[in-house]
Image 1 (cartoon, helix red, strand yellow):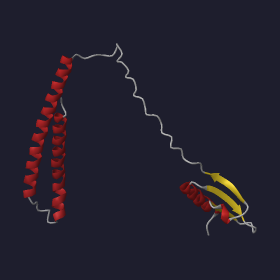
Image 2: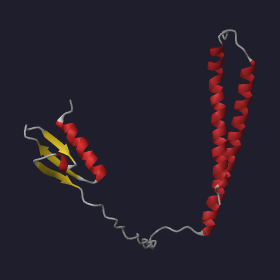
Image 3: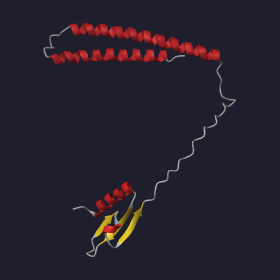
Image 4: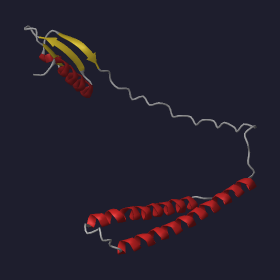
Length: 156
């Protein structure tokens, strides 16, 4: 059996979907019905009535006026900025070189350990458990190298 609350929610959602009027109707036996079609019932009261939706469009947004930089704002000369940019590029290149060395070392260590089968690793899962951190290290260094290369490519 459907509760009246559910009927109201169902009627309201139907009303919103069809943009109709919602009626609460009572029959001679005292049963309450909610409908969006008044012709089917008697003794009806309007609960809600949808209004047509306006097609009014908002005016286009005006571009905001740019705020001038305050006189007290610190300024950097173009030479100083060029020096900072070159320092940043040098630091990134040094980090990239160090990360590439770390990647080469991680790959070498992984290759060495993949070739070794320890006595307690009769179960293949033990071998995988030992190798997994080394594989993760290689992947980490590869991601770092990629990120540094992208950062250097974005430099002016």
